[in-house]
Image (cartoon, rainbow, N blue to C red; front, side, top):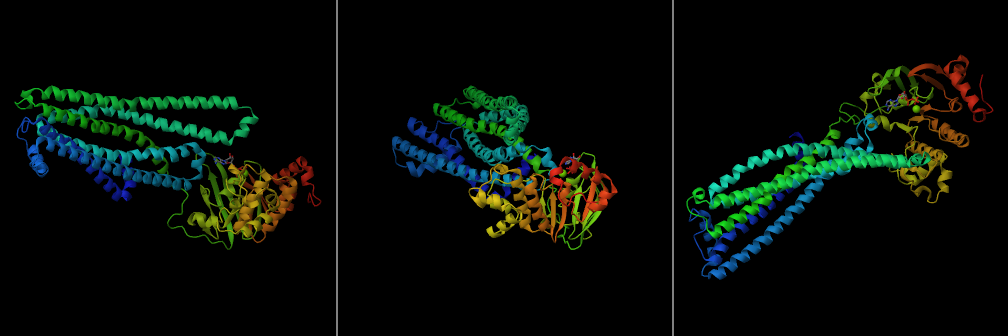
Length: 614
Ligand SMILES: Nc1ncnc2c1ncn2[C@@H]1O[C@H](COP(=O)(O)OP(=O)(O)O)[C@@H](O)[C@H]1O
Ligand SMILES: [Mg+2]
């Protein structure tokens, strides 16, 4: 029930339209009933057997019909009367379909609005989930939820509800007609309903479970496609086409099985309810033909015809109502997947009580420890202070925790112990948006969007003019290659920027950070993909950029951090040495070892004229 109620909440804003749909559906069903009712006088005038229609003659229903129709058929011959009733019947039919069409249109509008709301809510939620979630969840599952699951959900609310209501009206109207002919028969019809409900329940439980499994499997396939497209070069380079095909074939096979299993149950709904309806009609005819049960008088020919028409008419709505839970089961399985994501607490949104960040003095790490969920400590007892305007380098072996350390500053994660203070205020008391607005981040992986060069540089500064973008590109030493590509700044970069080399992409990322002109700059191996020549160019740009800024720079090549005012050496998550290049080199610790190791490995790039200091 919980999921249903939550879905209803999404309908509340559309209450007005929903009521309108219910009203038109009601009118359509009423007209539908009217068409059946009109059969009574029509048959009466056609066969000329007035008054002998029901077992309990004269029935109230007939009196009402006679009274309503009197102006229409007063003074007419039975033939004319039949013709007039027939035209009324056709008019009713047309009106019924007009209202039916209107209902459908409103329903679609409500449904698609609901789907849009749910989709946008899900996307909004994703934008604010903790980073950790994305590392544990395959993108394909989320894509599948955003595209297919939210779309499935619409069947729950509008289609099903309106249909349920519409069909319930038809059933009630028909039952009234039936009860006028024989209330005993009607009771009999009603008495069979619980059997249908009980019979369906078992089926539905399984259907829901299998639908869920099918939706999960669909997510697996979507994930595989998305991931393999991203890894196409890898697959080719290692000749894994056949292996990948086999894996994909296996997953498709798996999905096929899940679909067939689901369909086995959903297809069973229709025959089961149809069989049930058939048996019901046989029961009606069987019982109706027995005067002892229907009330003493055998039913007339017209009575049987009307009764059968009514009973057959009621079949289709009963069937639809019986199928309604099946549609529900499939949709609820999808809704469950959507709500599972929506139920994850949003970790990354400004909270009440957080205040805007100020940065005039210093950044301080105070006894910071951090562990990724379920993992060991990757940082421990990290304490240091960076006065505003200082350039600090962080070095250490790969896996030492350098990236994690700088990721804590824009609050990509919060420390598990200790705190990071900005001008003495813990980051956790500051809004993420204001903290991040102070920083430009160039990460280890350059992330480019499938957009123009201009848009990629201006990301995060949407109002930037072309002039500002060009200035940033010049400062990042990217101007030259941008001018060389066909459409310059208007060139579309392919999916994930595949049209650029690694070094070019890094320079775009640097230009992007420069354009924001942030007081704090975080460079995490921002020049690692550059060749020594362009690295020197970019390094110049960075040196220029570092002026008047507070910088945390992680550099792969130690030659590039030699000029940092302070170097923090990290090993195994703890700070093992601190100082400037000269002091650290002389100390002969980890820094010295790393430095010597690099010079041995890369004698050509590192042997600058001013190289090895003391
Ligand atoms: N998202 C993550 N989830 C779990 N462990 C992680 C994650 N990112 C990094 N680690 C682990 O944290 C440690 C430090 O990683 P990282 O900060 O990237 O080191 P560095 O940047 O110095 O190479 C490593 O042992 C790594 O395996
Ligand atoms: Mg790293």
